[in-house]
Image 1 (cartoon, helix red, strand yellow):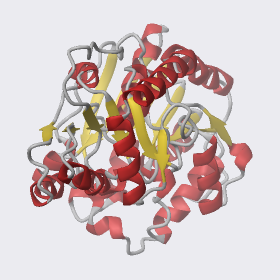
Image 2: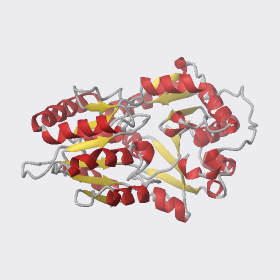
Image 3: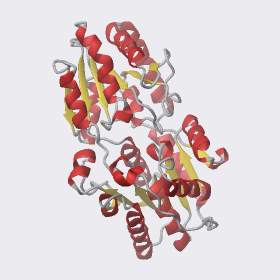
Image 4: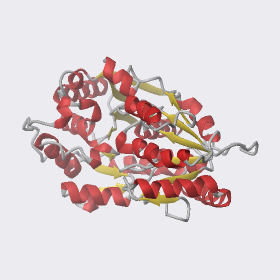
Length: 405
């Protein structure tokens, strides 16, 4: 099968979406498929600082095509980038026809794939992951209409979990029957427990996009009282993102400098070892599509502290395999962190429960096979063409800050 996978941004070090893409591509190649990835990237100074920037790295066995987001960098002109993605798909299809087009992110990638399917007749699949389901479409009429059309007319719509599907249904009016739930997954052969028998204070890890929407600033506010009490702990903050500078300043302002260290960019090949250095994974996120980092932490036998938020409640149950607080509830997060830092028996119990569940349910072999079954069912079908291509152009907050889309 010849597959075109279209990614929003491919930076495995800081993006759960990119980690998902990388593992799926590996599974497709291992199964013998011919895979081309077309990925956007930021090439400007802001994009490089926030997302790493630069063309996507090579992926073994995959033809990788990088497209600089020239429109996004030019005052949020997403329409130009959609046109460029579509042109790249059509050029590759003319070189050698595709059997399936798979977009990761509903807009702009999903919209580009729908347009390409209209011209090629190739069936399409769209994955809704993260921000496209949480806020894209609530920002302006242009993106609302685009998201609704993608959700209603894609050949198949994949989404990570039931709570996320319910959120998108409530927000955009999508028929729940349109969704195929494909959970997140983790490579359990790479993410394995470390040896923390040497002792020392508990090590807390925050890994992912450094973004207020992921709760990184809430985490610092919650830890400050524990540091003031003299509680012993270390904090590693790994990754880059839009709140990186603010996070660094807040560590100093809250007198957490003796406890916290920011690693910046970490190459994905080094991430498993990063988890092995920690005891506790902290992810006080406001919303996820399905948290790949939490699965990596579970596979690494870390105790998880997170929030009762979309995309988390489907894999973490408070008091069973992790601790959950309400998003933004700083006192509750402080209490949960105090428990997990001071109570080694509880920390071990939660870590063991998450580890066993992760290895049993969330393997990439099973999830990759499920996605390939979706592809196989689509082969030979005709794409839905009953939707207008024209979109109104309306003001949008993401045109002012497109790197946040």
